[in-house]
Image: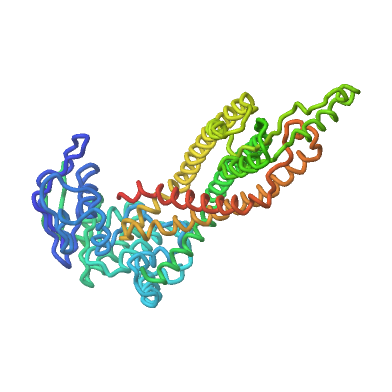
Length: 225
Length: 299
């Protein structure tokens, strides 16, 4: 669950990034967060990852009160969240298997569990044959699938996808969102940040619009055939 | 942390050396050159100190005695030998002195035939252990009964003490400067090798890796490069120094003129130097690499 209560963020250069934002995304929900560049979407993500702290307001993510969570304990929060980024953020010196396994290794998961879980998740995103490939040998869509596998491998409560289709062609974009929807149907909360309104209209669902640091729309929009 | 995780992180560190081989080689070279510069400077200073020490050991204080009996002379000898700053005491009888004088003045012919009584005094010839402390030693000697006069190379000692102090200061300044410059260069090399992986570090942070988990492979990597650089520096020093000594020792005449009888032998310093190289290389490289990751761990 994600909850923001009257959150405001003003950067040191005076930019008012978020202004008195309140928002709640329940467990198991799928929410699109839309808005133009500079609207405050990235600030919202940084807050949820505890990369930055708000000037005012309270934030709760997966049972963590972010105000009380110390910066050096942020890894505990991050382990409950799976991330998917526009630029995939894969480690180019590791192959697909190691990129995904890294998450489990970093939490000291048993070796046997890693050996079973990683191939399973790589299979889920349809990359069984690419486990030994390096990110630079994969297409954009495949790289994003690896990022999805990495986000999924730790069985997170929440997946945050930041413009996951930004670098992909329309067909691959749809495939990725369908994968995210499938993950959501298994009970994982998904928050997808995008500026592609067309895709949002195509899939429908809860849509939160941010403009100039404020939420201007938060409702369900219909699925367009 | 589990053993399997430690094993993974160790392997990861070793793998990183190969994956980032260009930066690894650059770090290795920088470390090697820095260690060699410091090592050879230390050898140079040690040799200079040995030369000065050699000259220092040639100091001689002569104590001329009044006409005292043998028992008194024996007592004086014991007292002198018991002094901390006196490294050797030799009794030089007036008969020996006269004989030496005759030998050194062979051209004087019959001059000594007219000498009925030996006019020369008995004496003690002393070597001083620490010439820096000679004044207090001379004061102590002066308090003894039966001394006519003392001859000590005060001017020479003053020059030598000044020279020693000068060499000490110059050595300390040059070594400190070298160490600082080396540390700056090494830390820049480590920073550069970490900089190109800042994206990697930020990804690791975002997927929930702890700082320790991220730092350990960097530590292993730095440590291994440090050990390699230390070992290579030892080998280069062993080869270079022995060759240098060989070349310089080909003609000892020049060195003898300067009262230099030999250089510090390689065997007596190489193991100490190798241990120093490896420890310094490992610590500087591992700590430098880990410290360079710090700013990227604040995500």
